[in-house]
Image (cartoon, rainbow, N blue to C red; front, side):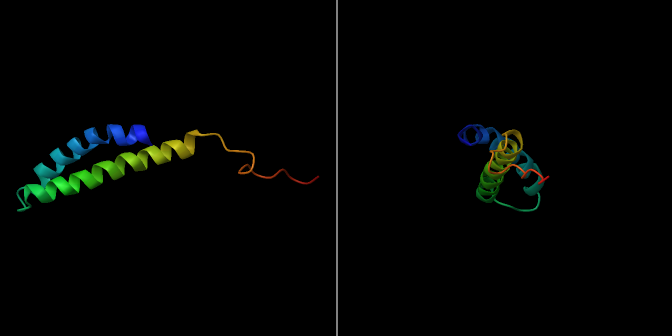
Length: 70
């Protein structure tokens, strides 16, 4: 999660470029685009990191499916 926060700045820059191209003709101000790119960049990065953590970590014994009774 800390690594995702650290590389989130690159996602913010990409999102900022996309939002700048898409929203400047619509009349949005640069402050609004900055805030939107900040939140969306970090949320996308942290969401991807959380999915990665959940699907790549082995399950603990307590979370594993119970064995069938014979």
